[in-house]
Length: 563
Ligand code: SF4
Image (cartoon, helix red, strand yellow):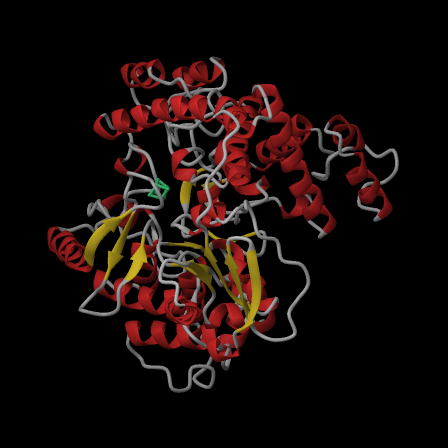
């Protein structure tokens, strides 16, 4: 799943998705040219960078307009955080690049020149005109009283905004260790702003989108690449490097290797911490420069190439800690479900986020947060102003939750919103993410931002007009629930259980074990899952997923008759 131009090109070639089964015995790339699909030798591309590969394939095909999604060396080497890169976007999280690498697929190139066919085109375009009107309205009327990055539409507009006080002072530096509350001093602000403005060559959008969430960047005349979102900061913060130019430099290298920019810097910071604690030794770091920047680049090279200690680190912090042993497990303190990492440490348990972190199949917080405010508004006037212009809300009761929610007192976290309310809120967030994912629509236009142009009330109309599968909100919700429960059942088959559904222990300073168990049990019950987080047979039958229940029973995941 990625933005950029790849998805649109694929659709113009006549396809909605590409599914790979089995593995190729040797490295190949796929060339989709409208109806003609070829599997071509890619042995000459072995070891090439993800961006370099795209250029080489376009030249080889003599098709400069082909869109190419490729992996770099990290994907070939099955690094657990390997990404799939495409010139103006990437599918970065959770190791999609490693899956391509495991299948020996270096790239997928596509060129599409067909027409698109809509069931009821004129009606669809009418709805799209409403969507466009709303986007224009929101762009000129940002939501007041929320963080700048949440006030508009799109991926957080990190390439437009230079004010990083909130990220640099609230997210943790190093291996999610230190909060630097006074970082955003005048000199740092000036330096970071100057570095960003120099590096950003121009702002860019994905296909047919006005939002310009990304930028073509080149720092200190280095090669150009695409950057967006929080990757702007993650390497500098993880390495404790106060110079933003370092981030631009190392990210170019990381993009060629094809690794995500969220968990990978955390892996490198984890290694540095182990070294400083004496758990990793000079032997493990032989040849490594001693300065912070050089050390990070050296470690990144080792991980992408799976050389020396990099081979262990390439499996991610959770597995690396267990392989290294000798107390390394204690330094694995911000991993969720063995993979995703969160460089955040906060004060008070947030019940909504507890559920989202703990229970979502996609693991990553940035994939589950969304349309509901992240914190209570301080004043009644602010709450009133927020809810009065909120057509996206699936039900009016959510407005009441916002009105009643206060920063302090009885109606504050952790006990408010109540567990029942939290389940409804989380269910709403998940629903939007599931719809976006199924449609291949940008989360920045739907599930990820506060007041998005696409929501549960206009999605059924748009989908009906586009596809001719007439559906209302309840029909769409059933599809969402089928998808959600299929994902869950799949993960249950892979071994996921209640015990895995917990945020890192020190994610919040103040934890409430009883409340957390109550939240989890209430949520499972709300979803129609058993006490271990597995969909019940009754729930699966309701969703016409009887064959999934049979499979779960056959494998002993769901015991016959088990509630
Ligand atoms: S809103 Fe989404 S589709 Fe549009 S430019 Fe931003 S990331 Fe791309």
